[in-house]
Image 1: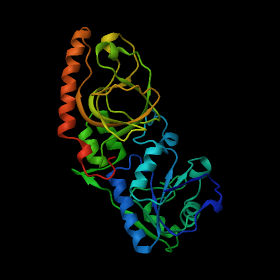
Image 2: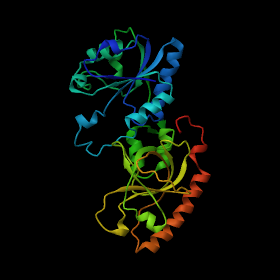
Image 3: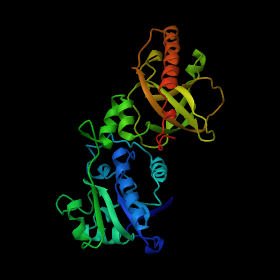
Image 4: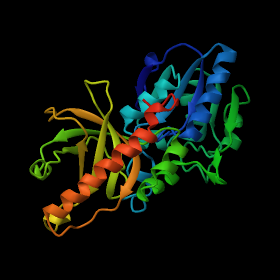
Length: 329
């Protein structure tokens, strides 16, 4: 997949001359609703003999326009994860527009001219709630008016929202599911197990003294993690194709004192290699229990032994690695 970054005003020389069916959206999480939009565009591209392209943004617009409302905002996918998911869906070209004032203050007509016609679109596909240009609510920057800005010369396909149990599939609903530890719902909405990128760093090494050595993880991007608790997970290292069973905890280690920051620690079953500094993928499979404050190390160890058994049962019986979703690996 060709990745092209655009900053207003962009250089026209960097735009491929190929005709494209252009998919519009932010696509955080590339969930099932997004997949439906992209696959609709893919079908049209094949009919027209055109390439499949996506136009997305380098940051979430709400971080600029609703700062207080989104002060705790975190992404479902890093930009790198998003690009990998888009590539798996068959996208040929991904344009990443820099969401600067020069971009979001474009008029609706200027946006259509520069970012639809200018990218050689022969057809434009987007979800029904897609908006564009300066103050879209006041200036008709919606799908209903897009054909007019294109002078009826470029086909516009509006894709209706995908629903699950009478609820719109959206990134907001998925974030709420993660905040509740409902990984099953998140998986149903995403179409794959929620996955986080991280780096292995040094921690307090308490787990090693308890007989449960852990990977201490540092997030690489401003991405969401599930609520505090203990989880069954799969873990894969950047230089290793194997997925390892892991018992993860997200919490503050209150058994050992007060005031600790939230940490992510994972005990891998049957694994003892030194992996400090390595990047990992964590596939969150099932919430096991809430965090607890124990009376001492012995009570904690007894619970961790039960957690290990539960983790192995969950991952053996219900592994997403045995599924057939093409976005799962």
